Amino acid sequence: MVTSCPPLCSSSNGVPTDTALLEVQDLTVTFATDRGPLPAVAGLTYQLAAGRTLGVVGESGCGKSMTALAVMGLVPSSGQVRGSIRFAGETLTDKSDAALRAIRGNRIAMIFQEPMTALNPVIAIGDQIGEALVLHRDMAPKEAFQRAVDLLDEVGIPSPARRAADYPHQLSGGMRQRAMIAMALACQPDLLIADEPTTALDVTIQAQILELMLELQDSRGMAIQFISHNLGVISELADDIIVMYAGRIVERTDAATLFRTPRHPYTRGLIATLPEIGRRVDRLPVIPGGVPDLARPFPGCRFLDRCPLATADCRSAQPPLQAVASGHDVACFHADA
Image (cartoon, rainbow, N blue to C red):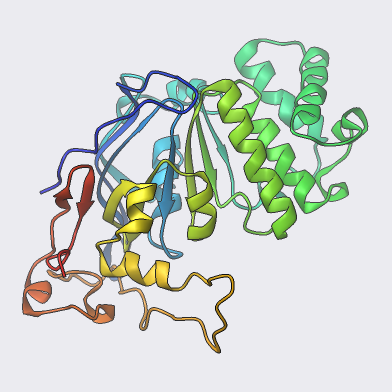
């Protein structure tokens, strides 16, 4: 059983957030494999309001990116999507491909993890950014290209007119990522999904990109779903956080509460691995073991073999995501330990 999502709050920029912009209910994404069905995402429920940032955290393979692809309507054809995804009051899971294309890149946009692979290597940056404007705003190609130049300037790329004529390989990693942000923001989306947008960047460029995203959110009032395995980055950005493990949400609350009083053993383990300034250690803590085989049916908690609190109850049943305090949900039989 899954509890209802935490209450929605007012955003920092004054955008009313008493109604969810994005509502995901019991989302499951399953792939058929030679060894049977593989549930990449299992029973996710969460909400995101306008002007808010939701951090989605977890190890590689936990389902963070697949959740984003489901929201975008981009799950590979071999995957089966069940559950409900509602955006601005409309049910996306019922829409045709044509209807989703009208929303994708327009009202919902995504920054993909690797800009070098997400950008077309044989099309100039300005033309790639302008494509969404031609498609969704009926702009002439020349007008769309000029708007692309303006967007590149807005995201802080020097000599934007010259860079708009460049190809992806001619830009640095930081510039490519800024170009991806410009592309995502071209149609002024209501929801921006950012999938590990700073992973390949050095810390200076990373800080600049994060600051840029917050500035643009503040000026545009958009919602951001920010996906990362980096809790340090998430702590700088997110209003609310969901922690995922093996396709499931194991903890969900606001950012301040999560870092102050984490209740799931996995969340505690993640936070313990963060280095502390001024504390010298020979070796950073790690969470022992590895992620379970999702294709192998198992009735109990997926974190069982790595958990210091595991008991017989954890082996026989999957702990439900339930409230341990107001606005704080945890999937653990030992959340009070």
